[in-house]
Image (cartoon, rainbow, N blue to C red; front, side, top):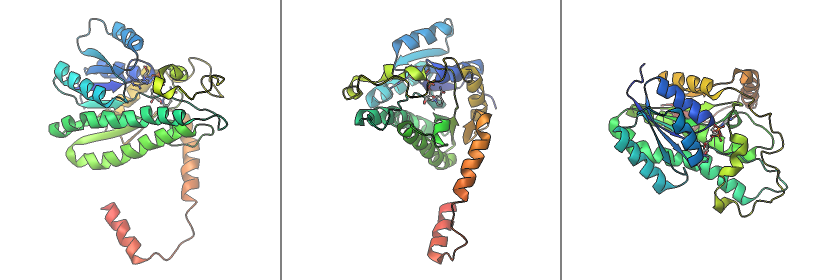
Length: 283
Ligand code: NAI
């Protein structure tokens, strides 16, 4: 249960939750490659770690597959290996159903889901060759609990949850852990994520649209990212499947899962073929 000397790659690592995770990792003696779209965020983050030789930065858009492959290569050149891959970069848009565009869907799904896929694909050969390592994907409470007016973001985060859960079962025999993080409200620049919308996803966006969606919380409300980073690092050390960070959601989550279970039909006769399938699935 020691991370000293390990190497991590963290996307969206120059701000908010990603930066909190980076700080918690650095504190445990982990060398970190901070990957982020925004050079200004990277410069600001780099300034925090000035004089630290175990932190490096790389500017990359997580939707750019060649760019991600190059960032992975750079990580190996700088630090010699990579043990922990944190796919955290994310954006949010919650347009009303009256003015939603395909560009909204494409942007959020490309970054939140596609970026996670690209992070996994870029590092999987390295992790498999090492026969050890850990992948952490940042989902959201909105990826496990239904919320209104959040359908695109929810689609991306439920997908991140699904891929993480299956990948965990798939990679466990190969020595690689997978965790998925479900933050609630955390202090970050998330509400300004429209600034991170790439040009190819801008064309159709109505200029009338307010930034941040219908309900914007007051600035700087929510958990401090450093606290969240600490919870994530403990989750990595314990190889937790689900890293839940905001206990105020416990009751709501219990209710939600209880209502899902309550939706089963009354006891049925189940044909043997289906039961065999079930057994095979569990094996
Ligand atoms: P943030 O905006 O402070 O940080 C996100 C970082 O990702 C920024 O530095 C941004 O430049 C970078 N980024 C954006 N698009 C990118 C791209 N295409 N390629 C590379 N980097 C890119 O926001 P926050 O809140 O720290 O977000 C981190 C993750 O946490 C996201 O996946 C978000 O969905 C998730 N999350 C945030 C919550 C919150 O309350 N802040 C709650 C639940 C989940």
